Length: 176
Picture 1 (cartoon, rainbow, N blue to C red):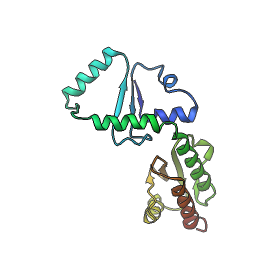
Picture 2: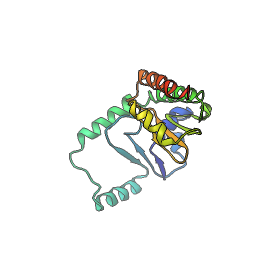
Picture 3: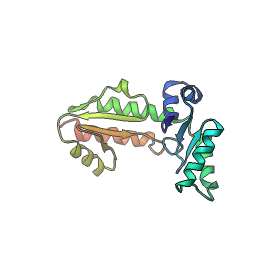
Picture 4: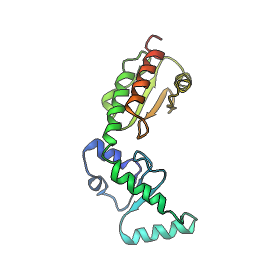
């Protein structure tokens, strides 16, 4: 089974097709809300007999949904309109990483940022202080392990949001 929550991001970053990436697996689940902008929704693909078993199991533990057509429509819209734009998120994430790499007390190799997730090390102050300072400016990043911060660029982060984030990072941390 492939937990393909970020499968579309992997395809966009690698230039490989979804089918090619999923080929070695019997089943694959994908998430329509991670990166594609649907409010909710996941899909499960695989041989008909396995899907039938999965649906029966899901329903037996209360996972069935009724009147979900509007959510399905949002998922179809996301699939039709948002897959192609994921590479834009990846470019914005790389820009973010490139700026962070110039700041004293932070460590990141921008070449390792392949998708929309930016993980960077904080070497000179507590991570909680960095996250709090950014949050006070309206920029939400999250602690992600000892000395590490996680930033995610997605559909709702515009190019101007990235510009503001870069300016804020420089203002807060370049001279410190």
